[in-house]
Length: 137
Length: 297
Image (cartoon, rainbow over all chains, first blue to last red; front, side, top):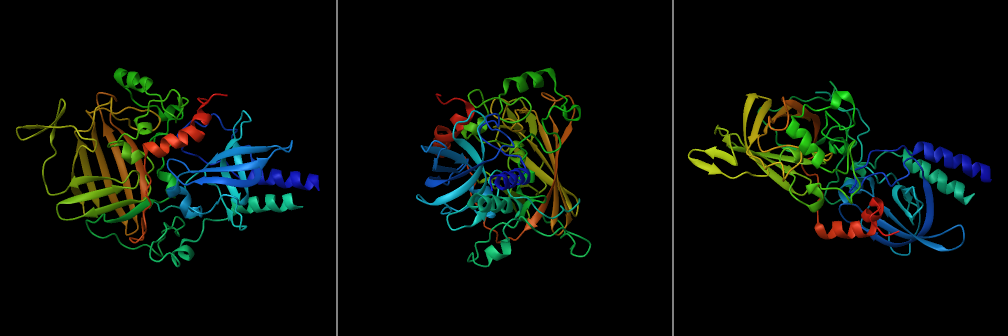
């Protein structure tokens, strides 16, 4: 069972392609390409500019609760892909995937989410792309 | 098993296409959500461009992210590659080195940055053309064209009534016998090159200690003449180009952008995307400072 989970985790990491971000900080702090899955309880969802923030309590490997602070792009960027003002509510049990800080502190940016109602949302780190080929001038 | 299901769900999240805007819009009570998943324009669905009209709600044809230009102006990303080196004058190099940006090949940590954007300063022309171009609304009448930028709800005027471009002079522009002030959006006049191409000239912008060209710290001075062309290729497509002539900072003119824009439904609800010192301060305290290493460990 464990090996199956590891394989799926590798597949997930391969699928979650790194996309360009635009942040009010450099990307140096992030462990680009690394993905961490967090299952926890939402304490706050801040729907604001220049970035939204999701704060959640996650039980660590030692059984201690850890507060994670995670970010997304601003509302105007993530609204079209389904992130709403009420997507997360305090007390919600959610699972999110983040690209974490390199130094191990509990911070990251959201690259995928499973909401309390089971709804699945994609990367919140970049504006939506057009799946179709662009018109050529 | 449960962890497998969660992982599988996240895989699907990564693979799923953007939410169908039509499905969302059918229940949005007329407040249409931007549709970034339009089918491409082909010979089968191409419609002719209207004559001398740029009016509409436009978004980058390759998706919202195509106008972000986080790595520098669209045609010359600041990535250190030889083909993207700019023709700086010695003063231009000096200016560039004095700018501490959060993006680009010479990016610094936020503790060291001095980008006016991070103080919610106006970006000015031409930087508004290189900062998160998203849904851009254009209105026009017989005298002028107005561009509404989504970022920070900013707007600018382009006069198309035949008036002359003001003369660029030290500290501002000369109009008749009047010395007029420098402006963040400068003074713009446009003329139709043909029925489908508007050429716009802008002068009289803010000096180099107030504005940058892009988010990687490239400079621009108040001696710049910005030339933009808006070419209506077909009904649904507009190509927005820009060339800079700034002898104070660059030794020769160069092209920054040639961005295809796609027409969106005119009823599309354009969300606010703004710089708020209050919200930015809250963000920095809770996340930005930690990302910068500014927070006490």
